[in-house]
Amino acid sequence: MKTYDTIIIGAGHNGLVAAAYLAKQGKKVLVLERREIVGGQVVTESFGDGFTVDSLYAGGSLRPDIVKHLNLASHGLVVDSVRKPFISLQADSNHLVFNADPTETIASIKRFSEKDAANWILFLNFMKKATQFIESSNAAIMPRLPKNFSMSEGMDLAKLGLNVRMMGGKDMMRIVRGIPMTADEFVDEWFESDVVKAAIASLGIHGLTLGVYGAGTGYTLMHNWANRGGMSHVSVQGGIGKISESLASAVKSFGGEIRTNAEVKQIVIKDMRTTGVVLSSGEEISASNVISAADPKHTFLSLVGAMELPPEFVWNVQSIKMRGSVAKVHLLTDGKHGIPAGTVALAPSIKYLEKAYDAAKYHSVSEKPYLEVTTSGKVVSIHFQFAAYKLKNGDWKTEGAKVEKIAIDTLAEYFPNLKSSIVNQKSITPLDLEQTYGLTEGDLNHGQIMLDQFMFMRPIPGWSNHKTPIDNLYLCGSGVHGGGGISGASGRNVVKMVK
Image 1 (cartoon, one colour):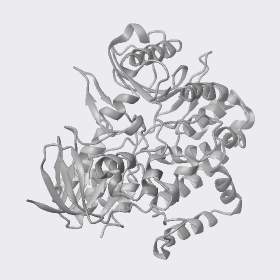
Image 2: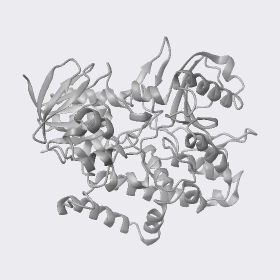
Image 3: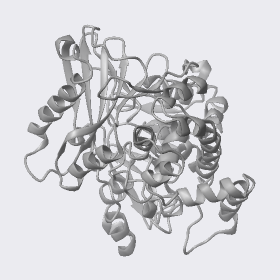
Image 4: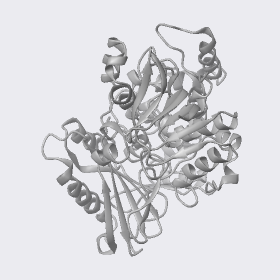
């Protein structure tokens, strides 16, 4: 039986980042992926002739240090240097446009508020510092609080505190105060126009099952801004899947192995220590370490099993809030859809966004959803919120068609040529996110990024340093600190903890 230094469960971007770093160190690494393609959420797939889409993420980029350390440019990763605009749709077609050029953005904001236009540069400067805070935070290994605190691990947290303090008293306080704020409160400190506030506040709820009046969405606004590097998505040449393809190529170039169509059924545990995994085929593979890039609930409750874990730990894992409420609708058109290039958002007002969230609270599909739309040639991709994973009435076998209809009808109010341009369509429901992409309850973040589930409380209090109660079993997916979005930070950080 072949033995490895490390087995990594899941070939999502975080799993591949961890594999590449370990393989680069000379470790014998095996990545196991249950699907036929690598990438997890970060994939570009074909749903028919000419119908190739970025399935779940419209754009994004790994941390620059990861790209540099793994030399991903040599493996074909090219990120577009020109950032496309973020366009907030308005009923009178007087759309609010946020461009890479601040002067153009100021001119657009000025149509809604002179005061807000004057504050834009100040806001950008603050968000640069907020981004530094998020990136410093994500680079840190969170110590195991409130118990089992390690001074060595606590140094990262101390450095983070020092970095925040060095930003200056005013910005430091604004960042600290902004963490528990609602997205509405966060933007209200800077802007007066409801149109401007809603456009920016939408980043605080993107991919999250909370409304703009939800506590902690100030933090997720900063988090999503940092991951995007601004308001609009960053485009990758050849599609978002090129990130995963370049990582897989790097893993192999360093001597690592990747197996697709290899679903892990069980993590083997002996005397509270992992010794490897068992595949659905029955094959057993041994390893000194196992790293799971799957979400914590699936890892512990399905792959490990509650019987192998302390009761209190199991209870905490069962209590992790997942609550996915995102659907995707992809349209193949004849190219005459009329939607401009960039990130096009339907977020006309703060109240509109909060009412869209009401559907998730009552386990239904929003009739007036918050949408983010991107285009790639003839393909239109729609990010739809909110569509609750757990439906009070009906099921996702039938509700998928409802999401498609609402998304198309809503967008057609702004782009009348859309409907007549549609050639083919494909929807991805929250249930599809679970069954096809392995996301428990359809949660893109492997657990909601909330005040009680972030930093040293992620995935659960006391276990924030990638380690688990099972010796030599580690976590590296989006469900641990540093996860959420496409930074790759949690995949990079776990390498520091593996023995």
